[in-house]
Image 1 (tube, rainbow, N blue to C red):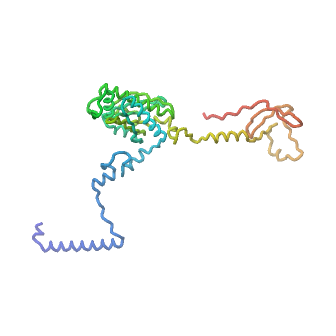
Image 2 (cartoon, helix red, strand yellow):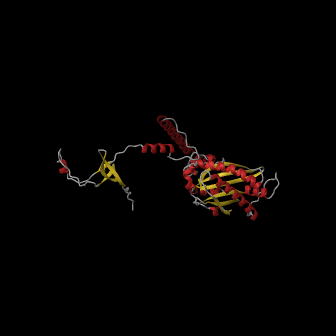
Length: 365
């Protein structure tokens, strides 16, 4: 700094030299860009809003159907489970049955609708349950596995209000931060029994199954019925009772549905995979009318190749069968019957004496 102040001429010459070098570099860059093609714009740094939009963490809808950007790419392989068309029909039937049963249960005007049916990982669902809520663990007796029903707080207070004679037109009371009382748990448990009975009836056209209530939990960690990484089907049901209501969520792991997977993959009720009864009947009728050849084996013997090559017209082959001895009737290489050779109306005939047993295939040890 002191040298620059003492020698202003030297500083000016340095500035002129730096400016000359900059001009030469710009000229070289311009010639190189003209030779290589159009100029490439400088790299721009993304701001935080653009990064959030790319990764799918913007303030848009958080539902699985509205994910965008990198989040959809990452999770595309996580929830790519098969669709079960017949299960959607079962849930539609459940909605219709529940509308009637809940009207009788609450003596109120109840409307039940289904929001959506989606596949997800069991652990992801446990982490997304809005608390406080009641989690009912139930067992499918015939399938020997478990399912989960979640009743949200709005539904809990609505059903308590309705069953205890609450006045209409008042908003449901919502109290958070306290444990549920015995009365609330008992009333919600009665609701769960009604829903599980309707769910069993919904599966009846497909296969008989009984859903039995096991226990009621308020902590999701105590309602773990499957591995956290296992796939599951989630059905979100909406229950409206005029100015009150709430949501019910049914979670069935794919392991629970595995015994009836083939039935749930059907496009319509009664569909048969790879089987056509009309074709089976036609094939059976044609098989009965099929002509086959039966060979009567009088004798079998082993000869040397030289003896076979020496055979010529007039040669005799002595059979080791005596008159009246049994002969074998074959169809191809399969021995079918055993009989005796005789004569009927100037024709050689064979009378079948007994049926030979079929050889059993060798089992692997």
